Image 1 (cartoon, one colour):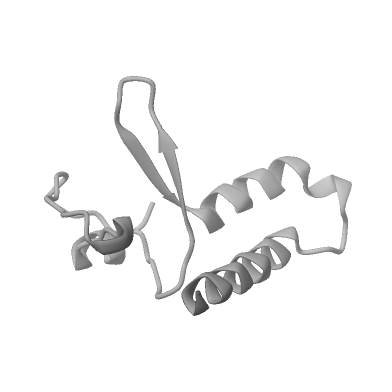
Image 2 (image 1 turned 135 degrees about the horizontal axis):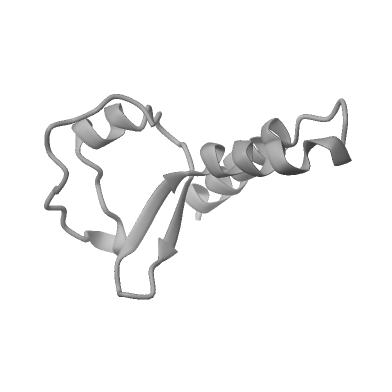
Length: 91
């Protein structure tokens, strides 16, 4: 997915309110834009998998797309997530 980077490990720090800043190389490799939502999955062995939500939604839409022809579930979900993010930032 996206551009390849030589590095595979990045040291980051948890900041105020539990925030983590992704290094520019990671954002570029994943084609992440400001405000984009990420899906964090806790792995059984104690790790975290991070994926752009749009990737997960697109994969799900591909599997379930026949259930809502003519409706962009991806766009609808992205719109909802952006609205949630705006509300969260306003708090």
